[in-house]
Length: 143
Image (cartoon, rainbow, N blue to C red; front, side, top):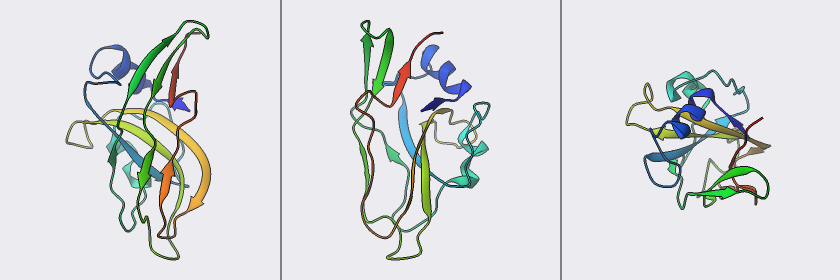
């Protein structure tokens, strides 16, 4: 998992809180997407978002923020996201990662928060689940 610089700002300055303030969404990215921490807004990366049958950005639900003093970090977690019947029966796009963003209603002003890379998966009309690690989807630590 990797945080965008804008995501660090959004989570730290009160523009949005992971566990309550703001509409946090997940978008699925194709394999051509390359993470660049300097990307700021959805419009900067939307050309690499997948486009296929039954795909739409989803709300990230059941978000929590937990202080973990034992491991010296803050854990941002959420319920897994299920995309139902994603893609055509064959020849669908390959999903390579996902990005969380705070939806402001415009891609030009919706700040990017973080990027999660996972095994490339070609969608084939079945269900596709983004399953977050047991340790959470974002870990906030200091150097």
